[in-house]
Length: 343
Ligand code: SF4
Ligand code: SF4
Image 1 (cartoon, rainbow, N blue to C red):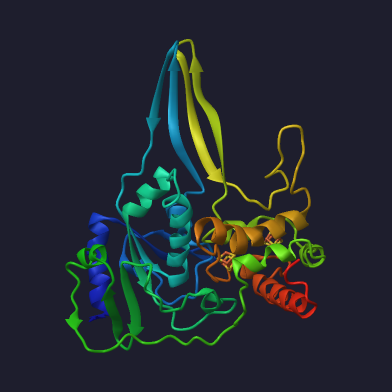
Image 2 (cartoon, rainbow, N blue to C red; image 1 turned 180 degrees about the vertical axis):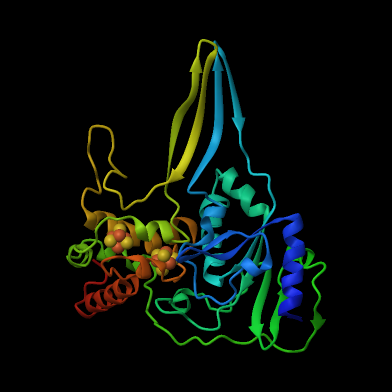
């Protein structure tokens, strides 16, 4: 473990920005967001969580996947694979864990998403431990912790006068070249874990609750506004469309764009002929929760929620995932009490 003073960390960051794109928490009007920074004094160190997760630096809200040019019978494809090295500075442990979830779905499951995988490979993660759980956070209920360094390359812990620096991976150690710091025996501070604690049912327990009337009641106030999916570090639904960007006697040029989509959108599951298996908001919101706690764990081995609390904070009508998890645990317990667990 090393100890670096604030001004030493700032000097290292300024030098790093000369050679790599650094993305860090920055105030953008009224919101704190991960954004590219040009100087260390733009970086906000003292924060709870950013309004959006940093997933957009791996899975952009809109990106060009391919450029297609057609001249007569000749078709050429130009694939815009990510090339640039980037450093994500001051990522919170829950957001880093969110990338682990996305890795399970988009990299470790064939076929890999080469665009996402490329950005993951070219990014170094510098974590910043939370000293405590913030309002709405519940990472400790989902196997995480405010000081968990499992998913970053370097971990920073704020201490009096500066930061303790832990080199977690070789990639992280290489990034730290040039940082002025002294060796120390000081142990990393243990963050305060006080906060909401909720029982998250095992994936196998969810199917028995699928037809409960509870879902209609709980989802009644949802507005299908999509906000919960856009802020979530693990939601990754997308849409792909082709747009003609040039057309003339010599041929046409088409861009294939991918952009975020939301499973909360009424049209998301509509199929040819107009049938929609998720036609009501009950179907859609229930599906969002089953995706996170039943389908993803069973299909990819990862619960697709990291307890960041953003969906609670952003929901305009107070739909609360912690409330839902508590209700569902109570429903499951009641079914066991009634002898209905094996139905
Ligand atoms: S708390 Fe909400 S926003 Fe955060 S990871 Fe879980 S579902 Fe996504
Ligand atoms: S943020 Fe709230 S209202 Fe909007 S779609 Fe999500 S649960 Fe529904």
